[in-house]
Image (cartoon, rainbow, N blue to C red; front, side):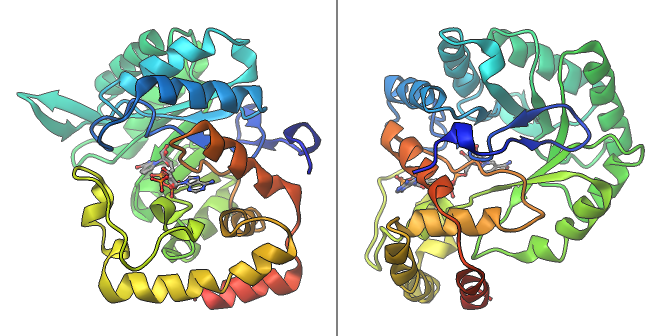
Length: 316
Ligand code: NAP
């Protein structure tokens, strides 16, 4: 099996931030508002295991536990060389009278970066994303604030997330956006027509979220799957009725391909994304250190053209 060290690094947009293409999505590290019964020590252990295995990109956000995910990651990275990790975090959620409002104003983004730096116990953030667009801030003004922070060395790359194409175009008026994070997976391919062409044309990196469709594309779930109370997947259409059944039939067809490469369906799915030139890196979410390690097997083989095309057609 290849190790991370044999894999080339990828570079983010126009920045000098580079890392190995499989990172870890950390919304289950301290993300108590997203998943029930999370064990924080387990969350810290999976980040530790990831870094020990050579994973560099750690993807977090303020809203994952209202700062808790960033705090736990900050505690773990102190045990390592700061330069060995690449921290991506996001903000846009502001609490007003216990209600969340979205805010992309320059002053809120600047405060958010300073607050995140404290929680992460570091003096720079490698990638800072505007997590969601608000309805009132001009997106080029929001990005101009981030560009100031980049020049000050507080952040190294500018990202936006959950932006429409029109919002991205406005955000990138000066060519300052380095990376976009948006939903993309084999069940949700709209961005092939929406954001991908613009990102490629502008030299903007793309990092998909929900690459495993919240675990559905691992092949481990069945038609009668249920989740604990409080797990957001109870509400997701992908995990219900006919839609779920249709996906399970397709996912089962990946099993023969997986056997051929001596890996699991998860790795076939993740490897397929990395064959797409528009996709820079992956941040599969993990709940355990084992899942982090397991996902690295994605880098141990190369899909044939026939298999790439078969998967493409199967999920059209
Ligand atoms: P995901 O990557 O599609 O699915 C992750 C889930 O799949 C895990 O929590 C785990 O859940 C299961 N899994 C992962 N590796 C596995 C393995 N090797 N074997 C078996 N099961 C495995 O979904 P996600 O975690 O929500 O999204 C990825 C990351 O994207 C997040 O962590 C977050 O950093 C980011 N994100 C960003 C946004 C945004 O608005 N920008 C939105 C959502 C997510 P189970 O074990 O419970 O099945």
